[in-house]
Amino acid sequence: MNPFLFRQFRRLETKVHELNYLFWECTQRCNLSCRHCGSDCFTSAKDQDMPLEDFLKALDTIPNPFWQNTSPKSTASRASSVKLDESDSRTNSPSRKDNIDRLIVVLTGGEPLLRPDIEQVGKEIAKRGYYWSMVSNGFFYTEQMHRKLMAAGLKAITFSLDGIGENHNWMRGNPNSYEHTIKAIEIAAKERTLDLDVVSCINRRSISQMEEIYQKLKSLGVRKWRLFTIIPIGRAKDDPQMHLTNEEMVRLMDFIAEKRQSSKPHPTTTSNTAAANTAASDITTSNTAAANTAASDITTSNTAAANIAAHPEQEMEVSFSCEGYLGKYEEKVRPVRHFCHAGINIASVLIDGRICACPNIDRDVFSQGNIYTDNLFEVWENKFQAFRNRDWARKGICAGCKQFKNCLGGGMHNWHSRPDGSISLSDLDNPLSCHYHRTGGC
Ligand code: SF4
Ligand code: SF4
Image (tube, rainbow, N blue to C red):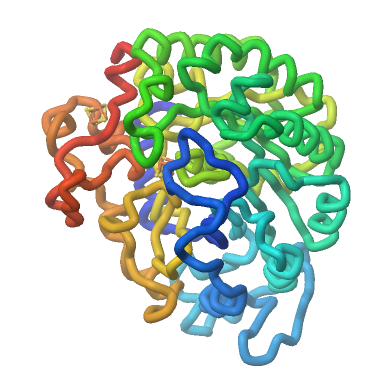
C-alpha cells in the first residue's frame, strides 16, 4: 500500500481504537527456562496464577450482546447476528459496536497449559461468544490435551520453534523440548479448523538453520511461519548469542523476502484487515513475554480465524513479525507495513491485574490501570494516550529521523526504562533497536 494511504489508514485505526486482541497473562509459571525469555518467569513464579473469576469480571466490562454480566441469557454463537440497540448509550462509540465479532482473547504466560483449569478458562471465554487462542511452548500439548481444548472452543494457537534439534533445546533449556514441540505442531497442523502459526526466534545459532526449519514446517503442513528477533531485555539482554549482527539482519530479511516471493499466500492473509490484526500478528509471542515480542504479530488474526481451513492447499506464508520499521524491506517481508497495534487494537491483563498492551512492553512505564481497581473497558476507551499519540517518541536517535512518520519510533516494546529504575515516559531516552538502520536504511 502507498505509504501515504497507509498512514491515513493507521490514523483512522488509531482514532477508532477497536479492541481486537486481549492478552491474558494467565500464569507466570513455566516448565522451561528459555534463554530469550523477557519475563524471567520460573517454574514457580512469585505471582500466583490469576483466578479465572477475576479475569472474567474484567472481561465482562466489555459490552457484549451475547452475554449480560448479571443475567447470562444467551450462549449464542458469535456467528449469529445480534444487533445492539443504537439508542443504548453503551453503543455510541464506534469501538463499542459489535466488538464481539472482532475480539479474540489470547492466553499467554508463562506456559498457559500449566493452569489446571485451562479447559474451564477456555469454556468460559467461548461461552461469552469470544474466540480464544493460546501461545504455548507445546511441551504438554498431547493429542488428549488437543481434543480437550478443541472441545473448549480453542480457535487458534501459536507454538514456538527456535531451531532444529539441539538448537531449539538450547534455546528452551530442556533436552526434550524439540521432540515435544514438533509433536504438538504435528497434532495442531492436522486440525483444519484450528488456526495454527509457528513463530521462530532467529538468533546467531538458528540463522544458519532457517532453510531447514522452513522445510520441516512445510513437511508438517504448517501454513504460517513468523520470524522475529530478540529484544535485549530479560535474560536475553546480556547474551551475545541472542543478537544478530546487522549483516545477519539483512540475511534474515533477504531470506524472508525470497520465500514470500516464491510462495503464493492466499489473498485473505495479505489483506489490510489481516494487517490491522497483525500485531497480534506479531503478537508474536512465543510463550514467553519476550517471544511475545511482537507477540505481536498477533498471531491469530480474526480474519484468519474466520478463514480457517478454507484453503488446505495453501502454501506456507513466511513473514517477519511486527517488531520494527524496515524501510525498503517493508513490503517484501510482511503482508502489510509496520504498524504497532499496541494500545490501538491490543490490550492485556497482566498477572498482577495491571492493564497494558503487548505483554513484552515495559509494564512499569506503560501500564494504564489495574483490573482490581479500574474498569477494564473504561480504561481501554479513555486511557492509552501514550499508545495512540506517539509524539513522545521523537527523542534520542528518533528525534530528527526522516522516517519517523512511517516508524513512530518502532514498536512500543522498543522503549524500556533504564536499569536505574526510571519509570516515567519522560525518562525514556532511546529505542532499544532501530531495524531501519540495522537493515541498511532506504
Ligand atoms: S509492542 Fe507493537 S511492535 Fe511490539 S509486539 Fe506489540 S504490536 Fe508489535
Ligand atoms: S531512528 Fe529508527 S527507530 Fe527511530 S524513528 Fe527513525 S527509523 Fe524509527
